[in-house]
Image 1: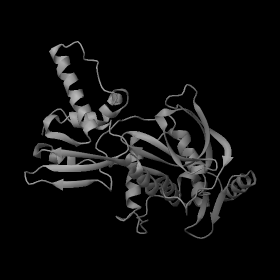
Image 2: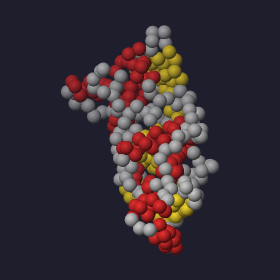
Image 3: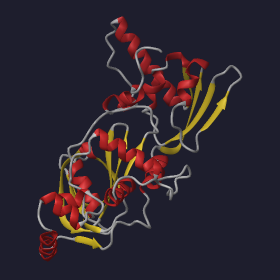
Image 4: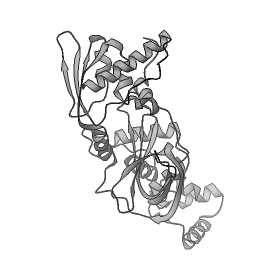
Amino acid sequence: MHVLRSREWVSANSLAQRFEVAVRTIYRDIEELIAAGVPIESVSGPEGGYRLASDQPLAPLTLDADEAMKLYVVSLLDRRRDGEPNNDVPELGSAYSREALKRLSQRIYFDTADWYWKDEGSGHLPAVRYALLTGTALKLTTRVKGKAEPAVTIVKPYGIVWKAGEWHLVAAPIDQPPTRYRLNLVDHLALTDLRFSYPDDEFHLQSWWASVMEANGKGETRVVLRAQPAARDELLRLTLKSNSEVEHTPDGGLVIRLYVDRWGWLIPLVSSYGGDVLIEEPAELRDAVVAHLRRALDAYDGAANVDLMPAAAGFRNDDSRVRSTRGRTLTET
């Protein structure tokens, strides 16, 4: 069975040579395996032979860095620049491995748009990968911010996405649309006895993820940033929403207009640029940045009121500060 699983087609003669038995013995062995329920396919002719049915899952091994890179490359080969499937994908390995990799590339997406990196793995990957390949529902126990009790949900896994060093599970709770779950927030993940059919014609993982990322954080609050030339190149590398506006100023700087749902996460980002990036609006964000910088000055001066901060300083309790500086190096090249 291991040989059948690792090859495209294996002839009876090669099996007989491999196990040092008569070809007739191989015929009897195959018949016994089929009778026992092993899904073996057979094709006659010089190029034919036996193999395990192509819908059998890969062994649920942990996805290591080498496999992740192979899947990433396959996903690139399998898409044209416009995101549509590429029918000119070269032959990669056996028919079974090509089918498995194709299925995985449709269900695993690497979002490399952001310039920060977190490097957090997940011990849930073996079960998730098995569920994706077999159409098995999962039972998730996840932590919910602000609540003492975890949430328990049965979901249909549609894919996983690698973004900024974290794995995100894209899954649909029963009778609900798909949503995303950060795997590092999942305390327990278990395979269930439930099976489902993957919505190949209705769901495209990369398109769904792109639309979710585009909608995430968008709102009606207008933020205007004015950047000096020294900050221009770095700000141009940031991923902006489709409704953002970038204006190039005569002095070589930038004016960036954002429309966000909340602006607290911008405090550490803008502050990290010092005087090279200034807030023009809203006034509340400008005041919050000034208060943040003043607190830093007071701390250096040994003032007693260093803990006084406006209500907008919630970023000190989330990952905004880490996100605003991740990916930068301490030396220049």
